[in-house]
Image 1 (cartoon, rainbow, N blue to C red):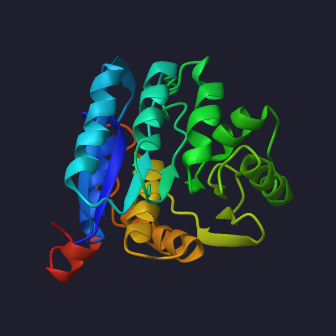
Image 2: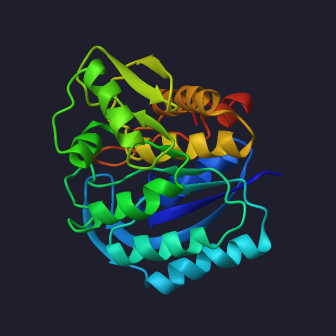
Length: 270
């Protein structure tokens, strides 16, 4: 069985973070392991507080898993501080034959809570971008990384190319915040662009969509899919998870990670 590792924060509401990643891995036929970087106090309405793990603990979670498992992909999510970023980079740099790393540069929650400390952005680019096979920023994260407005498909293409010069080999600029009728992502593999379009789903169940999308890319790459194939299949998966989500919580509810398994079991309405 293929194995993936998620490195990120724990979401107490279960819809994002490592909980979303592990559900996604399992739903897509990949065994999930995890290195927890932080514990969050959050629900569907907002993030209230964060407690980081000690950097050495995060480092050792990663290395002990690689000592025991053949890991086929790594997904990195919330890494809030310079010390955590450096610990993760040190751990991954010690691995011979590092598998594909998918980096989701989580910077701010939907409720506006800063998930990346101001001084950590440069460290993220310096230490983790060169390790990443794929980076998956949304538009606000793209604008933060490049310090400029990105408000069109052409601007997203230019941004993807520029982000690739920061060290990441392949880039997905997610266009869900663009405000157009649909949702268009720009994929760039270092040479070629591809536009990935989908219909916008009107729902409040969007908690953890970025985490789920990037972990789906990791799962498909762990299974041997190419960059474009993995992202296209991940887009189909996250669209289905959003479309079939249960209306849980009082805020932005979670997606339905096991919608296809429920459908096959005749449990669509459960």
